[in-house]
Length: 86
Image (cartoon, rainbow, N blue to C red; front, side):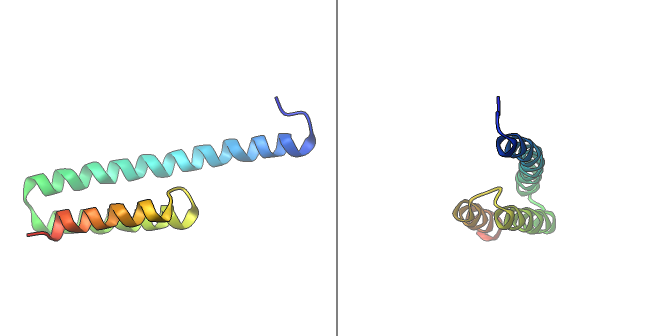
């Protein structure tokens, strides 16, 4: 357990950040599943809109520090390859 005032404050901040980051990561997983379903269905318009939503959310997550920027770039490249490779 934290003993000093600053450590107590940092523990509170850490807990808030954990919950916020968890929500963002859950949203990213949901969007990834939606993208995968759209690609499997074969609908080009749905796939493109799902890819745009997913990459946009990934960019925002990288900007806020939830996801590493290189990981976001890698995911975006794989998404583009998956959707536009036809």
